[in-house]
View 1 (cartoon, protein in one colour):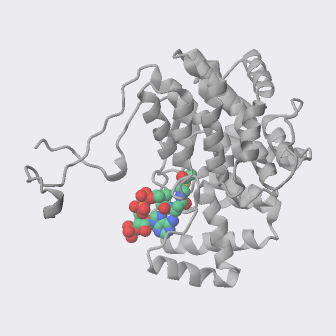
View 2: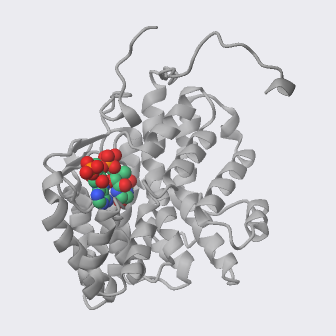
View 3: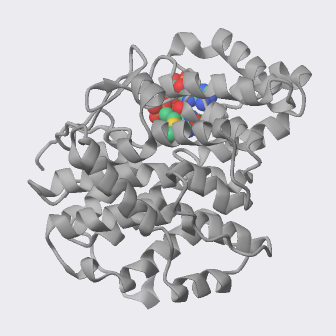
Length: 375
Ligand code: ACO
């Protein structure tokens, strides 16, 4: 049998070429289109980041204006889709609700039946516009609250918070949400982006590709970790219990949520930005105190192994301080990352090749078939 190099989990196996995002895992640096993440967080908006990723360059003022206007006018959902949200059982996980609603939206989009990249770009725009609406509508419906229709005079981040809470957020709250969305917009060849690309590479439709991304992001080893972090803080309970909890967890080889990364072997630059917001928003809170202590102790225990806080470690505290339910944390990640998924799909389809890895067969060959009544 032919021998192939094998890397479990495809670790360090390049699967595509891209100009979108570069991560320097050793130095803890992240760049979109060659521009450091700190600069995007400081100077840009989520709308501009999303369009830049889709275009693979900074847009002109005019292009951004047109894109922003199109986002604002594409936010609402078909009434039949809203009815479907009302019919979802309230115990549905919001990520599952998002996945199901995105699937359904395909039926209402003529562009889903077109193959050209322009149609896929338009779908990407519509999905970026609609993701916050889906999440906010589902959250309000399950809490027996009236849905709040999108307000086209508000920015993407502002409008999301408005649809969730029914109140226009403060400038500071909007800035925090906008930066959180900027930080999560893309991250090179991660599991959910790869899932989207695998589906797109079969020349399936854009909706199926994005649904695959949502499914992959839901897992606790990927996007679901931010929910798990807050649950872990609840389990720890108090600052005094941090050392004992970590010692016991490490002894049992249990992962500390919000720590470690396949690529970063240094402090995740996104975590550093979110830590500042967490401190500003909830310095006095129990969660923040526990988080700082967990970080301090973990640094002593495992930093030498290259395990540092990742983006999920502080994002949950920030969202919690904004009054957002814990199970919406991963959907917020998806609201942002949909831009990255779509951008990678569009980039890959320009020179597509179906993903078809191989596996190493470990079984026997030429065995005899045994009839069922003789087994
Ligand atoms: N807590 C304690 N130890 C850890 C952690 C952690 N969070 N992460 C890694 N380690 C240890 C492992 O036990 C292992 O130790 P060993 O060599 O003594 O056996 C070593 O570090 C390597 O761990 P792997 O699991 O092989 O590292 P990998 O690169 O495959 O995993 C992952 C990365 C999945 C993110 C892992 O660190 C993890 O599960 N972290 C917790 C979940 C989490 O926060 N996920 C969010 C990731 S960021 C994102 O997706 C947005």
